[in-house]
View 1 (cartoon, one colour):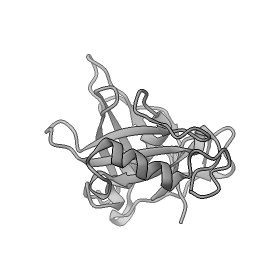
View 2 (view 1 turned 90 degrees about the horizontal axis):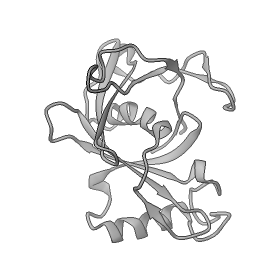
View 3 (view 1 turned 90 degrees about the vertical axis):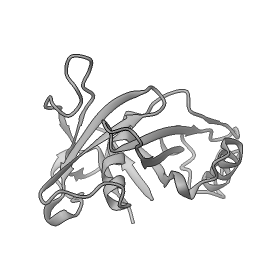
View 4 (view 1 turned 45 degrees about the vertical axis):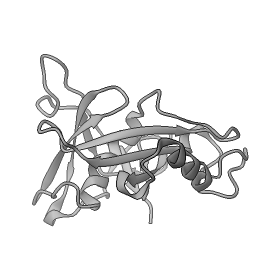
Length: 179
């Protein structure tokens, strides 16, 4: 699924839809995004690091989180894939993706998804509207540098003295799904 998260756009995958072996997974992702060509003309990458990102998500095995999220930055002109950093922009799309793909049930009015960021081992919570049990992407919240508006997704990064999901976060329209 292609989604915008914050000021980035990326490909979101269920872990089960990708090869288990990291080398085979990375080779497939490079082909999907068209990496190795600065225009990424033979793939879905956008010829820029902000649009050559991948989120890999699976149901968490830990009771404190709902899903695990692995961020992968895919090179544009170089055929590289790295997991050495997080991406808070794509993080914003993880909760809606988890609901859309059936990893987490939607609440009647809103849903909070607890997310383990595999790259750092930290936990975040994403809260968003789900009226009638469906993710609502429409909204009137703008992000500087992004055209239009979208629904707010509240990300809470918590901390040792304030667990994720317990402290109100800033409201920003982090995610917009594109068909």
